[in-house]
Every structure is written in C-alpha cells, then in structure tokens.
Length: 436
Image 1 (cartoon, helix red, strand yellow):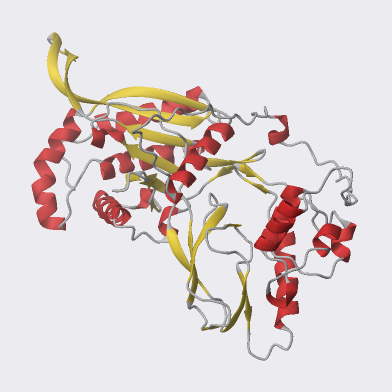
Image 2: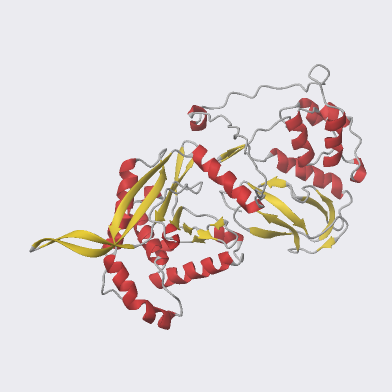
C-alpha cells in the first residue's frame, strides 16, 4: 500500500467462511486515509476463517483470513503457523508511527509454550489489558474449534477484571539495550487531553467519517514527527499569465485538454528538484533516503470536503502536455473516487494549490514521509515598481505568493529558501513566446 501507509480498515467482507474462492477473486474491501481498494485472494480454495472483522484495523503485513486449499490435510494447523510467523515479523517501528509489542513468543516463554491459537486481534486486546497467556487459557472460546473470539475476551475483561494482586503475572525478559537512535534522543511529546467541548441546545453533532478521522490522525502525526519551518516568496508571473491567455484556446483545440496553472507549477517544481535533489528525500532514523524518482503529489479537494493526494510519477520526464493530461486525469478521477492504490503512493514532494479557493498564502503541513510541501496562492493584479532604462516606473503586474513548509531535521533555511526562490525564478522567467 506504499511506505506511508501503516494500517488499513476492513470495510466489508465480500466472502464468508465456507465460501469457495478463486485465485485473484476479490475477498475483502479495505480502506486507508488515501484510497479504498479490494484485496484479491492469492490462491484458490475455501475461506476457513476471518481473522480481522469488519470495521477493525489491520497493520500492514498482518494476516486477514485463513484460506484452505485443496489437498491440504491439515490446513488449519499450517495456516495458524503461517499467521503466527507473520505476526512475529510485524514491524515494531514504522516511519512516523511507533508500536510496542507485548508478550510476543520471543519475549514470553509462557506464550511460546502454549499450543492454543489466538487471532492477532485477541492477542492485541490481551496485551493492551495486561492479560497473560495463562489467563487466556482459562477463557472458554465460542469460535470455530473453540477459538477465543473478540466477544469472548471482552466478556472476560468485563466479568473478570484482573486485579494487580491476584493476577498471574507473565515472566518478562528484559530486551537487550538497543543502539542509540535519533528517535531516542528526540523530545518526547506528552499526550495531551483535549479540553471539554460545550454543547448547547440546537448545536448539531456531526461524526467524522472514516477518511476524515484518518486524515486528522496523519496530520497530528506529521506535526509531532517533523519540526516544521515555513518560508515565503512573492513571484511576478505576468509573463506566465499572458502566455496562458494566449495559448489556452489553441491548446484545448489541439490537445483536447484545458490547461490550468497546476501542471505549470508541477513542471517548475520538478525542474527545481533536479537542480536541488536534497529536497527530494525522506528520513529513516539516522538515514536520509534520497529518492531517484521525482514523484509529485497534488492535493485535491473532494466533494465530501475531504482531501486526497494523487501522485504524478516521474514528473520531470513529462512534457507540459503530458503533465496537463496527468493532472486533469488524476483530478477528475479523484473527485469521482476512481483512483487506484498505486496512484496515491510513493510521492516524494507535494504541491497544494490554495489559490483555487481565492487564498493568497498558507502554511501547509508536510505529507509524511516527505520533507517538504509547497503551497501556491491565488494570482492577483498589483501595482509594482519596475526598473527601466529610463528609471523606476509603477506598473500593474500579476503576482502570487509561494509558501513552503519543510522538515528542519534535514532541510535547513538555506536549502529551503533557495529551493523556494528557484521555483519562483522559473515561473518569473517564463518565455512569453514559447510554444507548448
């Protein structure tokens, strides 16, 4: 699902236990903060058990279901071993997010001695509630083959709340001290409790939809991960505006596409990145990953009020006509919820056009795991002082603000300021007589 996706929500099971499934047939629908998609079966067989129920969240790499294949005499045992194997390999650290493992087979001798199978969801709940393996063994399971279900463990927690004195404590093994990392040296941000909200009579309570909740979580995470710095420049784009006015009719007639300012901005950003590739990076612990490909995401507002960021892959290799086609196609399908998972991942830099809403400037939040995001404001006519051979004169010019937020861990003011100024210079130097 892409390096920036750590989890997905199961929104709908298309098959139920006992159903026959063909290879590559869609089995389950999942959703991330970026896009909804279907998960196909890697094999032909029978759906034996669902491990992640509808509306529950699964981590990337986590098993969703067990499928029995033809000719397998003991599918459940092998499938269980495979699930446990994958669960042991689940990442404990993902860029931007940190997860803590509790009572894993490698850390808990008691857990490894147990032959009873528990789904990842049940084990996760047990870890969060401090329930040991010995206590899990006491729960009577109502699932298939006596397995403990989510409802079983929740009932156990409700009816048999474990006291500190009477609980059976699982033996713990202190992990070996890890090598110092950048995250360990960073400041830990305490979890803040939001203040209570006053609701008066007549106020409307609107529950956030799934996509809005995930966007909110991603934005909070970005501000916690990256120290944001924002720089601003004002660009004189008079030549660019006059050029577009001159060619837009001919462009649409020849190419069948309307040319907006967005592909022009994307082209300018891609050109600047080629000149200053250290803006096209990601942070992985103490390592800086410099990306070879220049994949520019463009933030697109949806009719629902939510936001999605389709990605133009290898933007530096496309002509202005190619960029226009890509921008128009992705924006159109984004509004109709027709984007594919591959079209919203692997971005290395993001552009957001706040000028389309009449805003002159903004302070955007970095789209992790990228390190910079550029916002372009609306183009306005302004009086400006021009230097001529006859002296200074005041003229009406088309101007706009560009603002860029960048990750101060790896992008200092010198690089961030120079890059932003370079994008503005490219736009200001637009050839009024250029073809398309």
